[in-house]
Image 1 (cartoon, rainbow, N blue to C red):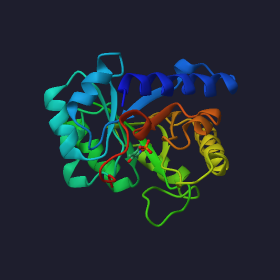
Image 2 (image 1 turned 180 degrees about the horizontal axis):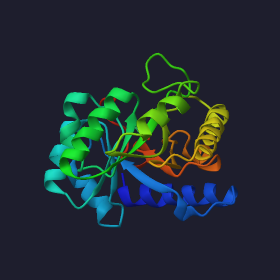
Image 3 (image 1 turned 90 degrees about the horizontal axis):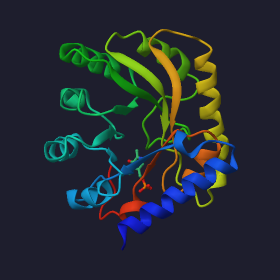
Length: 231
Ligand SMILES: *Cc1c(COP(=O)(O)O)cnc(C)c1O
Protein backbone atom coordinates (compact mmCIF):
# COMPACT_ATOMS: atom_id res chain seq x y z
CA UNK A 1 0.00 0.00 0.00
CA UNK A 2 1.35 3.39 -1.03
CA UNK A 3 0.37 5.99 1.56
CA UNK A 4 1.39 8.92 -0.62
CA UNK A 5 -0.69 7.58 -3.50
CA UNK A 6 -3.68 7.25 -1.13
CA UNK A 7 -3.21 10.86 -0.06
CA UNK A 8 -3.00 12.10 -3.65
CA UNK A 9 -6.22 10.28 -4.52
CA UNK A 10 -8.10 11.65 -1.50
CA UNK A 11 -6.89 15.18 -2.15
CA UNK A 12 -7.97 14.94 -5.79
CA UNK A 13 -11.42 13.75 -4.79
CA UNK A 14 -11.78 16.51 -2.22
CA UNK A 15 -10.90 19.07 -4.87
CA UNK A 16 -13.29 17.48 -7.35
CA UNK A 17 -16.21 17.50 -4.91
CA UNK A 18 -15.48 21.08 -3.87
CA UNK A 19 -15.35 22.34 -7.46
CA UNK A 20 -18.48 20.44 -8.41
CA UNK A 21 -20.37 22.37 -5.75
CA UNK A 22 -18.77 25.73 -6.51
CA UNK A 23 -16.56 25.72 -3.44
CA UNK A 24 -12.87 26.36 -3.02
CA UNK A 25 -10.95 23.12 -2.26
CA UNK A 26 -8.86 25.10 0.21
CA UNK A 27 -11.92 25.64 2.36
CA UNK A 28 -11.98 21.92 3.16
CA UNK A 29 -9.55 20.67 5.83
CA UNK A 30 -8.48 17.06 5.54
CA UNK A 31 -8.16 15.40 8.93
CA UNK A 32 -6.20 12.16 8.55
CA UNK A 33 -7.73 9.79 11.11
CA UNK A 34 -4.70 7.99 12.52
CA UNK A 35 -6.40 6.12 15.39
CA UNK A 36 -4.87 2.67 15.99
CA UNK A 37 -2.19 3.43 13.37
CA UNK A 38 1.54 3.65 14.10
CA UNK A 39 3.47 6.89 14.29
CA UNK A 40 5.68 5.98 11.32
CA UNK A 41 2.65 6.16 9.06
CA UNK A 42 1.83 9.62 10.38
CA UNK A 43 5.44 10.63 9.70
CA UNK A 44 5.06 9.41 6.10
CA UNK A 45 2.08 11.73 5.66
CA UNK A 46 3.76 14.61 7.47
CA UNK A 47 6.70 14.29 5.05
CA UNK A 48 4.37 15.37 2.24
CA UNK A 49 2.59 18.09 4.16
CA UNK A 50 -0.31 16.25 5.79
CA UNK A 51 0.16 17.16 9.46
CA UNK A 52 -3.47 17.33 10.62
CA UNK A 53 -4.54 14.16 12.43
CA UNK A 54 -7.69 12.87 14.13
CA UNK A 55 -7.70 10.54 17.14
CA UNK A 56 -10.48 9.13 19.28
CA UNK A 57 -8.63 7.88 22.37
CA UNK A 58 -7.12 10.25 24.90
CA UNK A 59 -4.20 7.95 25.70
CA UNK A 60 -3.25 7.69 22.03
CA UNK A 61 -3.26 11.47 21.64
CA UNK A 62 -1.07 11.82 24.72
CA UNK A 63 1.47 9.31 23.38
CA UNK A 64 1.59 10.66 19.85
CA UNK A 65 1.69 14.25 21.04
CA UNK A 66 4.73 13.45 23.18
CA UNK A 67 6.57 12.33 20.03
CA UNK A 68 5.20 14.96 17.66
CA UNK A 69 3.86 18.05 19.41
CA UNK A 70 4.24 19.92 16.11
CA UNK A 71 1.38 18.04 14.45
CA UNK A 72 -2.18 19.35 14.70
CA UNK A 73 -4.47 16.96 16.61
CA UNK A 74 -8.25 16.79 16.59
CA UNK A 75 -10.16 14.89 19.25
CA UNK A 76 -12.97 13.20 17.33
CA UNK A 77 -14.03 10.43 19.74
CA UNK A 78 -16.26 10.35 22.79
CA UNK A 79 -14.58 12.23 25.63
CA UNK A 80 -15.03 11.35 29.30
CA UNK A 81 -15.01 14.26 31.71
CA UNK A 82 -12.26 12.70 33.85
CA UNK A 83 -9.88 12.77 30.85
CA UNK A 84 -10.56 16.31 29.72
CA UNK A 85 -7.43 17.74 31.35
CA UNK A 86 -5.24 15.53 29.17
CA UNK A 87 -6.46 16.94 25.86
CA UNK A 88 -7.38 20.57 26.52
CA UNK A 89 -4.64 22.72 25.06
CA UNK A 90 -3.08 19.82 23.14
CA UNK A 91 -5.75 19.52 20.51
CA UNK A 92 -6.72 22.11 17.93
CA UNK A 93 -10.39 21.25 18.33
CA UNK A 94 -12.60 18.87 20.31
CA UNK A 95 -15.25 17.68 17.83
CA UNK A 96 -17.29 15.53 20.19
CA UNK A 97 -18.92 17.82 22.75
CA UNK A 98 -22.38 16.47 23.38
CA UNK A 99 -23.45 17.81 26.79
CA UNK A 100 -23.37 20.97 28.88
CA UNK A 101 -21.64 19.00 31.62
CA UNK A 102 -18.73 17.99 29.36
CA UNK A 103 -18.52 21.54 28.00
CA UNK A 104 -18.36 22.94 31.55
CA UNK A 105 -15.49 20.60 32.40
CA UNK A 106 -13.60 21.65 29.25
CA UNK A 107 -14.26 25.31 30.00
CA UNK A 108 -12.90 25.05 33.56
CA UNK A 109 -9.77 23.24 32.39
CA UNK A 110 -9.18 25.78 29.62
CA UNK A 111 -9.52 28.64 32.08
CA UNK A 112 -7.07 26.93 34.41
CA UNK A 113 -4.60 26.78 31.50
CA UNK A 114 -5.35 30.34 30.44
CA UNK A 115 -6.65 29.42 27.00
CA UNK A 116 -9.91 29.23 25.09
CA UNK A 117 -10.57 25.79 23.63
CA UNK A 118 -12.23 25.54 20.23
CA UNK A 119 -14.95 22.91 20.14
CA UNK A 120 -17.65 21.52 17.90
CA UNK A 121 -21.03 20.30 19.11
CA UNK A 122 -21.74 16.72 18.06
CA UNK A 123 -25.09 15.89 16.47
CA UNK A 124 -26.51 12.39 16.28
CA UNK A 125 -27.86 12.98 12.77
CA UNK A 126 -29.29 9.51 12.29
CA UNK A 127 -30.79 9.30 15.80
CA UNK A 128 -28.82 6.08 16.27
CA UNK A 129 -28.78 4.36 19.68
CA UNK A 130 -25.14 3.39 19.21
CA UNK A 131 -23.95 6.93 18.58
CA UNK A 132 -23.25 9.99 20.68
CA UNK A 133 -24.51 13.49 20.07
CA UNK A 134 -27.48 15.78 20.51
CA UNK A 135 -30.50 15.38 18.31
CA UNK A 136 -31.44 18.19 15.94
CA UNK A 137 -34.33 19.34 18.15
CA UNK A 138 -32.27 19.94 21.29
CA UNK A 139 -29.16 21.21 19.50
CA UNK A 140 -29.90 24.97 19.20
CA UNK A 141 -30.76 25.53 22.88
CA UNK A 142 -27.94 23.37 24.23
CA UNK A 143 -25.42 24.95 21.86
CA UNK A 144 -26.37 28.40 23.12
CA UNK A 145 -25.91 27.27 26.73
CA UNK A 146 -22.49 25.81 25.90
CA UNK A 147 -21.45 28.94 24.03
CA UNK A 148 -21.86 31.06 27.18
CA UNK A 149 -19.08 29.19 28.97
CA UNK A 150 -15.96 31.37 29.23
CA UNK A 151 -13.26 28.84 28.32
CA UNK A 152 -14.94 27.59 25.18
CA UNK A 153 -15.43 28.83 21.66
CA UNK A 154 -18.10 27.00 19.67
CA UNK A 155 -16.88 26.81 16.07
CA UNK A 156 -19.63 24.64 14.60
CA UNK A 157 -21.02 21.14 14.45
CA UNK A 158 -19.83 17.59 13.89
CA UNK A 159 -21.61 14.37 13.02
CA UNK A 160 -20.88 10.72 12.43
CA UNK A 161 -23.46 9.83 9.80
CA UNK A 162 -24.91 6.32 9.55
CA UNK A 163 -22.88 3.73 7.69
CA UNK A 164 -24.73 3.36 4.38
CA UNK A 165 -24.13 1.46 1.15
CA UNK A 166 -24.87 4.52 -0.97
CA UNK A 167 -23.56 7.89 0.32
CA UNK A 168 -26.54 9.61 -1.34
CA UNK A 169 -28.60 8.26 1.56
CA UNK A 170 -26.73 10.61 3.90
CA UNK A 171 -27.13 13.72 1.73
CA UNK A 172 -30.34 14.92 3.45
CA UNK A 173 -28.64 14.56 6.85
CA UNK A 174 -25.62 16.59 5.73
CA UNK A 175 -27.99 19.21 4.34
CA UNK A 176 -29.75 19.41 7.70
CA UNK A 177 -26.40 19.96 9.41
CA UNK A 178 -25.78 22.91 7.10
CA UNK A 179 -29.23 24.32 7.87
CA UNK A 180 -28.57 24.01 11.59
CA UNK A 181 -25.31 25.94 11.27
CA UNK A 182 -26.99 28.70 9.24
CA UNK A 183 -29.81 28.94 11.82
CA UNK A 184 -27.34 29.19 14.70
CA UNK A 185 -25.33 31.82 12.88
CA UNK A 186 -28.38 34.08 12.85
CA UNK A 187 -28.59 33.86 16.68
CA UNK A 188 -25.38 35.88 16.96
CA UNK A 189 -24.06 35.07 20.37
CA UNK A 190 -20.56 36.19 21.40
CA UNK A 191 -18.75 32.91 21.89
CA UNK A 192 -20.15 31.22 18.85
CA UNK A 193 -19.32 31.23 15.20
CA UNK A 194 -20.79 28.20 13.51
CA UNK A 195 -18.56 28.32 10.46
CA UNK A 196 -17.24 24.74 10.70
CA UNK A 197 -18.99 21.53 9.71
CA UNK A 198 -17.04 18.37 10.49
CA UNK A 199 -18.74 15.68 8.46
CA UNK A 200 -17.84 13.02 5.92
CA UNK A 201 -15.67 9.90 6.34
CA UNK A 202 -14.12 7.45 3.86
CA UNK A 203 -17.52 6.25 2.76
CA UNK A 204 -19.28 9.56 2.14
CA UNK A 205 -16.87 12.48 2.20
CA UNK A 206 -17.54 13.69 -1.34
CA UNK A 207 -21.26 13.98 -0.62
CA UNK A 208 -20.51 15.76 2.67
CA UNK A 209 -18.28 18.30 0.88
CA UNK A 210 -20.99 18.96 -1.71
CA UNK A 211 -23.31 19.81 1.21
CA UNK A 212 -20.86 22.14 2.92
CA UNK A 213 -18.37 20.12 5.01
CA UNK A 214 -15.36 22.22 6.07
CA UNK A 215 -13.57 19.31 7.80
CA UNK A 216 -13.60 15.73 6.54
CA UNK A 217 -12.28 12.94 8.80
CA UNK A 218 -10.74 10.20 6.72
CA UNK A 219 -9.06 7.08 8.04
CA UNK A 220 -9.44 3.97 5.90
CA UNK A 221 -8.92 5.64 2.51
CA UNK A 222 -5.56 6.97 3.72
CA UNK A 223 -4.19 4.37 6.16
CA UNK A 224 -5.97 1.23 4.93
CA UNK A 225 -8.37 -0.85 7.02
CA UNK A 226 -8.02 -0.88 10.81
CA UNK A 227 -7.32 -4.10 12.74
CA UNK A 228 -10.06 -3.29 15.19
CA UNK A 229 -12.78 -0.69 15.03
CA UNK A 230 -12.16 2.25 17.32
CA UNK A 231 -15.07 3.13 19.55
C1 LIG B 1 -12.74 6.29 12.78
C2 LIG B 1 -13.43 7.58 12.60
C3 LIG B 1 -13.39 8.26 11.35
C4 LIG B 1 -12.71 7.71 10.10
O1 LIG B 1 -13.43 6.65 9.55
P1 LIG B 1 -13.07 6.01 8.12
O2 LIG B 1 -14.33 5.37 7.70
O3 LIG B 1 -11.97 5.04 8.37
O4 LIG B 1 -12.66 7.10 7.21
C5 LIG B 1 -14.03 9.49 11.27
N1 LIG B 1 -14.67 10.02 12.33
C6 LIG B 1 -14.72 9.42 13.53
C7 LIG B 1 -15.44 10.08 14.65
C8 LIG B 1 -14.12 8.18 13.70
O5 LIG B 1 -14.18 7.57 14.90
